[in-house]
Image 1 (spheres, rainbow, N blue to C red):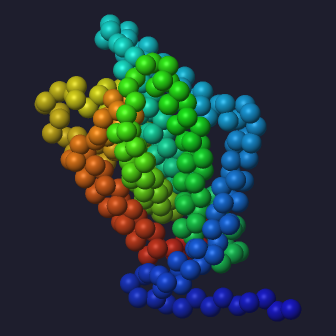
Image 2: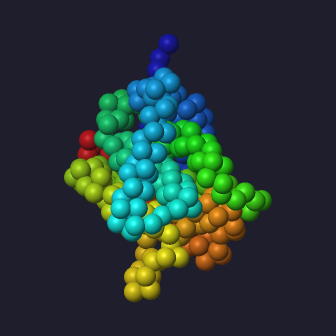
Image 3: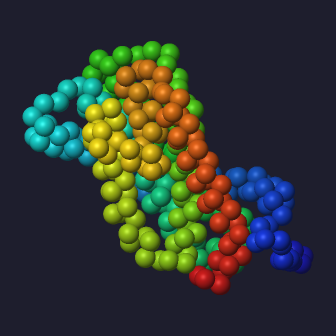
Length: 275
């Protein structure tokens, strides 16, 4: 039986026919799921100790940061630790998406050269892996919330739209950086420093309302600043996020997603040559 022949035709403005592209992407959703599972198995996610480490790693890191804050500041409280833990867990969703996405294309060289499929599936799978790694930490964050005696209310349901915005932002960042890494391979070496800088410049080690007025004007340029602030308001203080925070996070998330997706799709046919 003869194998099907795939013919690549030129398309306008570097973009593929989107209806057919989305149809192929939808039909290959099983591949995305299996590819993500294989990545998780490689990271020992299927074992008890592998899943335990997903929680212990950010939890121990939050403990170290909390001790550092206590030593430097001299005082701290349960709310501070709840804020630190909750926001750090959400930050790791974004950071893990970037870490998995940066080499999603370059590490899939053989697959790209020998198989016809929508290349955007690779960074998408990296985000799916990050989401699976985030879910256990979300459960732990709720347990810590209860142990610390922090308030619960119906306002905490705002966590669902905030989490959706975080996923859109993570996907946009993963898609964009996976494409950039094809052309500038050094970006993968710089990524740990970029994520660490983003960690220190975001309201994780500190609460947004306690930031000094002299640098408060620069918070608008941080794409995840208001996202993490809204998450802290909901998950730690059990109050509704501000309209400004939600609008800022939404605009940044969809802007990054649209720009990253357009850049990726317009360059997708060039990957085989660059790899």
